[in-house]
Length: 328
Image 1 (cartoon, one colour):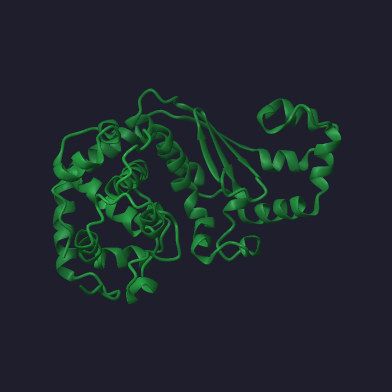
Image 2: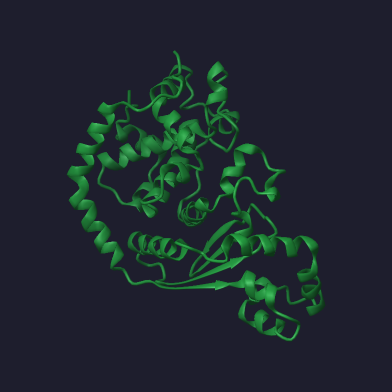
């Protein structure tokens, strides 16, 4: 078995894709029209700016407006001193440079909330987006919390920003502003998905495939690379090598293996996937999760089920009913 080096996708694949999408275009257009008509009441509050600009006489007003950001056991002097902290000052300056104007983000957020409302009608149509500075807390970059959405702008200053120099290179791409929507969608999706009790490798890749499928469903205009946290070149590598990756998993009897090390080799973020082959250095991390996404996509194409049904279906059933065959 040999993996392919990156090559351009064939013109045949492109032609087939064009024919397929033209046949689906009308149906998709009707769905987009229906979703675009969903009313959403959205406001955006710049807590980062309001807190930074508030003097001591205005601090109580800010605290009343955003009580969830303040520990009531801490005196006002704590917050005043915090505003003077060298790192905090620098963070505010850099965020202001990058996000003085939010650009297309408000429209993108509104569209995202419409898709959420379409697939989850019980979700509130009133949304408040709050931007803040988390002091580069990468565990809480974008959080979906009922009617609130919290976005830590200091974690989206760009992969080359000096604040992120201590992070591994393979993670720095996640600090681009293009990851705001995918991160927020992931926060929402993970709240809706039941936990995975099946410890097989197949269940692991399909669990991640479910999340990726749902993110793309809620963000149809976002490139697959950003859904994955990949570069465009990494997505193309997976497309070119799909059948070889799948054959590796089959030939090595990995699908029903419960070795926890398979998760770090093929599912969680990493500089590359570990096939223990010469090709490893060319591969992106998380290729197992990407393959899980392809299985889930095939399953959803071949079965008339809702997103909620998908989340509640066992991995083995999804795999068997998907009739998944990797592209050649």
